Image 1 (cartoon, rainbow, N blue to C red):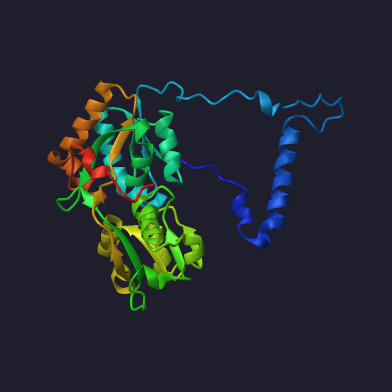
Image 2: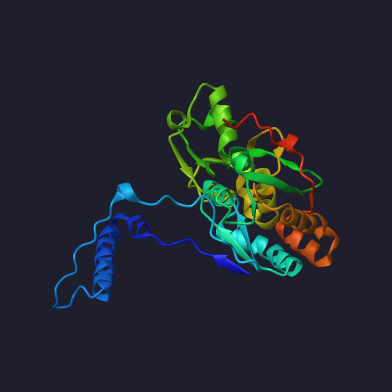
Length: 319
């Protein structure tokens, strides 16, 4: 199994004011190296400068280039941080390799929208997406299976705060720092937004400051470490965190919970061949009956995968 890494950016240097000079020097050194490699420091005549016409750029292709037949590309939305995703999903991806006979490539992106874009352009063959991202991008994807956890195929959005704080509900968070997960997250963004809307409020004016963590485990950590006064998180991830980190139980508490929402599903791109979709669905649906598959599912905190029910994905919180 291979892992596709995200590209590094110079903005890493610029995240601290004291390092901005280092960023500038790094850029200059980088450009100088490129100039030397291109022969720009020679004594001969300079090559005529190439003019790039921004009004004549070719459009990006709608679909991905031809994929290798022996490769299965699997995207996982950043419900967990990259580290948590690899630890939780790697055993099941190895299981997929053994069952399909293909080389499985794990593709990770920072935001839910980026994973939706991969599905829309058919860059990946299947993906684990969040509920809000599915609702927003369902025109470009098909439901494959739904995970069952604790006998349920639904979950809740939880508002959490530090244990022992005087915060009892959302109204008590006025002027506080609040952690959202992702702009497409149902539990980590759309649900708390719907609560604010009912109060006649918006996050920019209601909270003192808001942040996006881009994963539910990071939102929990933000509350644990005092970075945020409260956060909206997935009940499944919060429950898993409580089982594996005693500090979550000791230092956080739930101040509000939503109604039930459909569990984050597994999907395939819209134009996936029926043969490929059927093969993947069969592997997912029978994994719990295979000893290796059952072990891999346990690592993800999933009992089994079941046939999808589109009716559980009608959410009043999504605009």
